[in-house]
Length: 264
Length: 139
Image (cartoon, rainbow over all chains, first blue to last red; front, side, top):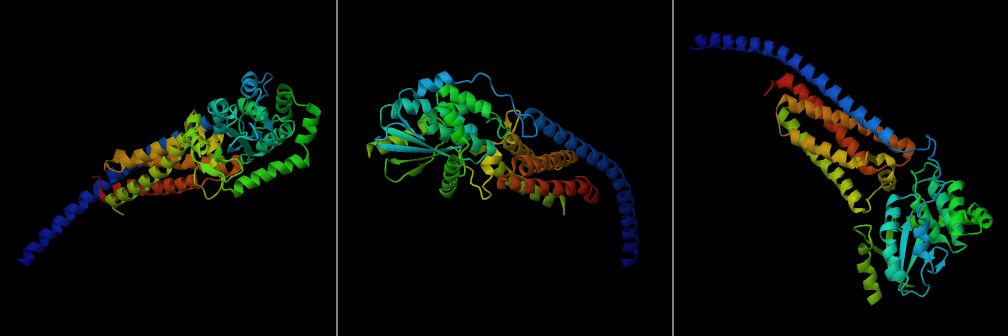
């Protein structure tokens, strides 16, 4: 029995080996085609993505910065928004307002610009003009060199109580990050528009005092654990400020916190 | 490794990728703060490299991971090849984004680095998976 079984097994094994040897050759050819196809497709997709990315994004410092707009946009809106609202340095609104809202922001940050145009006007109308809330802008230069230049200019404008006008117009004319868009031509144009003494402004924005203010506020923001902008804190004026988490960049996101503080 | 094990491993990694990319997409659209150990996440997410023709790259990553995850459920050679193509494209594009973080942006985002690592592992496993066609026979 055992002798009869053995040859059968050998025959079977041989048959299997023969088919196995034939099959991989076919498969190998097919697999190679698949490999090459997959690699080709992958390279094509990746190349298309990279080329598209390079072609559609703006300057990164190696490309010439985008030309400074000769005409500033948003000046009328900014003046209408802030006309008659008291300002002191980086603070907007009455010093005796019962509630303080702090915004940590970078002039280069697109979300800050979005907030400045989507939420700030309503907040100014409802809370700041009515003397109930004062807003403090704490600059945080974290996106790059243009951030520091922009914040220094805002601080210098703040020395002439035009801080908020200045950042609002920077946002309205925001360019590609770190492309050198915050240059003296743009800063000069904004300074003219908001009506600061331009020679004093130019001296101060390049002074070491102002650089130190920007550096300090950036360090303080980092020390407070702020790692994104805009980040908001609010509290009773003179009291403890607590972080306010916002889920959107419109005024509605801050209203509950402000109303609660005003009622307290 | 057998194909089924590879499929499980790739599926698991793709699931992880979906979580990472999904988190970045979620924070991007809600405007929330990204928790970050490198301190560079916001800088990277807000840079112009993070958007491709109006579409955040996190969204592209999410789509790629979802597609890879779905393909892990199929045993066909076409699925394996498509998976490899997606993963390789992902690795090459991740390499470009890694360069973008290192050179022009000058900041790193740990979520992006995690995604790079996941995509690279998936690509290696996808290569093995296509190889397993030869080793174990097509099914």
